[in-house]
Each structure stands twice: as C-alpha cells, then as structure tokens.
Amino acid sequence: MKKFIAIIMAVIMIMSFATIAFAANGFTDVSKSRYETAINELYDLDLVNGYSATKFGTNYTLTRAEACAIIVRALYGEKTVHDVINFTDVSYRDWFYDYVNTAVFYDIMHGHNATTFAPNDEITYDQMVTLILNALGYNAPQLTGEWPVNVERIAARLGLYTNIYSYVDGSDPITRGEACQMLYNALDCYVVEYVRGRIVETDYTLYEAMGFSYEPIPDPDPVKPVNPPVADNQVFGIVKFVETYTYGENHEYIGYEIEFYDNTTEYKTASTKIIADGKLNENKLTEATEANLGRGDYVWLEKTYSNSDVYKIVAVIHFSAFQPDVGPDDSPVYPPVVDDGTGENITNPPIIAW
Image 1: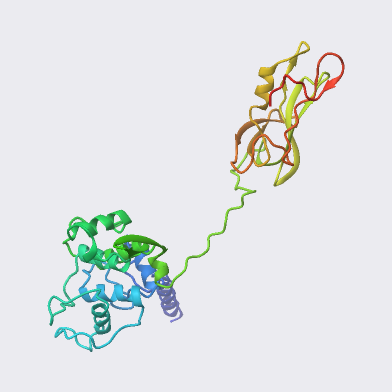
Image 2: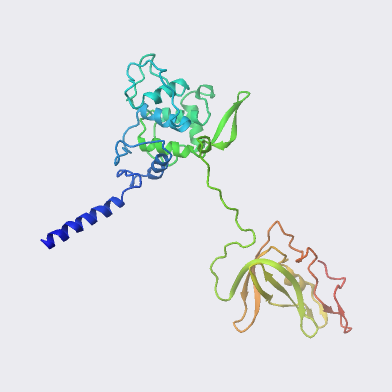
C-alpha cells in the first residue's frame, strides 16, 4: 500500500512539474512556434486571446472578426462604441459585436455590403497589412498607386513581413500566428500623419501611441568601457594622464608615462633611442611619439619582459572628444629633455617639430 501511495505521489509531482513547462499564459501550442515571442508579447499587452486557457490556435486562419478585435484593441483598448451597425450576421450576443461597431464607427473596417459583415470569413495578408498600416496612420485610400501593390511596398519597407516565411501571395489567407507577428513587427514603427497631403513621420511609435512606454536605456559609461579578457602581461584602459619622459646618461631614450582612469598604477612604455653619437635622430623621435597619446585615448599595453616593468604600446584608439596631442590639463605634452653635447639640457630644441 505504501509503495502504491509513493507511486501516486511521484506521478502527481511529475505532472506538477510538467505544468510548469507550459508558457506563462498557459498556451500549450505556442512554445515551439516561430511566432512565440510575438504571440506572448501581444497577449501580455491584452491585444489577443486564445480559444481556451491552453489553446491559442497559432496555425488557424484569422477571421475578419478576430482581425477587427485585434486592431480595435490596439487603437482604442476596450473603449468600444455600441449600436452603430445594422449587419444581419452580427448579433449583440456575439463576442465581437462591440469591436465590429467600433471598427465601422472609426472607419477601420466595413461590411461586404450594407447588411453583411461576414465575421467568419478568412482575412488575407493584404487585408491584414492594410489594417495595420491604417493603425500606423497610413490611410490606404489616400496612398498613391494601386492597391494592394502600394500597401505591400510600404509594408516591406517597414519590415512588417519579417519572420513570416510562408508569405508568398498577398491574397492568401493569413494565420493567427502570422497576424500576431505582423502586428508585433509594427509596434516599433513610427506613426505617420498627413501634412498638406504629404505623409510625415511623427516622433512616437505605434507601441507608444497605444499608451505604453519603453524601458529607459542607461547611457554607457564614457570613462570605463568594458575591457576584453586580458593576459597577465596586458593592460587596457583610457588615459587619464600622459607625458613623455627621457632617460639615460645623455637622455637618449624617450617613452611615455601613463595613468588610466580606472587604475592608479603609473605605467612606462618601452623606450626608443633618439640620440646616437651625440646627434638627434628625428626619425626615431617620430617613431617614439607616433602614437600621439593624449588624455582620453584608449590604449592597449603589453609588458615587454616578465622581469621588467616597462610596457610597449600595442594599439591606440583616439576618441574624437579628446585632442590627441594635449596633456592632462589641456596643455601640450612636453617634449623630451635632450643634450646638445654641451652638457646642458635643452627642453625645447628648435629642431623638434610637434
């Protein structure tokens, strides 16, 4: 008996975990669909519903009544209009009655004739894209060119067919999943308006026109970019302080002393011999300073020898916000101290061009 109870409890636990695998909205026919993201997003925005708590009907053909409901919810939420229509095939008992009333009142959709709306008829790609473009402010009757070529051209430009790979002919019926994808693609499109007969983009998207707002995107830190993984002998950073230095018995070597914004260590770059046989080698001076380091530059250093604290410059990225030839206080980077052979140091030899 105890063994039987244990088996029952195990089955119950397995079943409880299985329900967790369902989508958050409870639909079991959405998780493996290419339209999963679109369906879940529109469901969260209260624009679409399923046939039941567990069935969305992704691959079912969209009907005129369903398309009407989606567009009305997108534009007006649940602020529907009542008692406008006189269609004999739309009863006040129908779930879509208020949506059809609202769509006709706002000139979004019309019946096949004065008495017939045909709520259960299939809707095509061209018809659905026309409804979405109307929601974006493109008034189909005012568009130049012949329908549906004109709406297809605009829809393609806006990317409304993205991820809808079964689309071939605009006159084919569209599925519920495809319609969700098409509207999802339109959420980030800018709404347009007509100004003196011309189409002008506004500064807000359909998503914002529906009353929603985007999560603010934090500005990236301009001082401390994300550094890639580095080896022990490598250093990355943005220069906070830099100046040239010379050393040697006759100050015949030149290099850089560098401090980074996110690192208090002072680094010295490998030296280049700029004086040989008592004469200044301008080519070597140019080579030593060709990186033109300045405050704000992004620099990659690599240690030359494991037993040394001297680094070599591997790469430099100059940022336009900083001048590459200025020091920490917007003053020129000081030229090296050199010896002209007289025993006196000259800090500004006239032959050095900076």
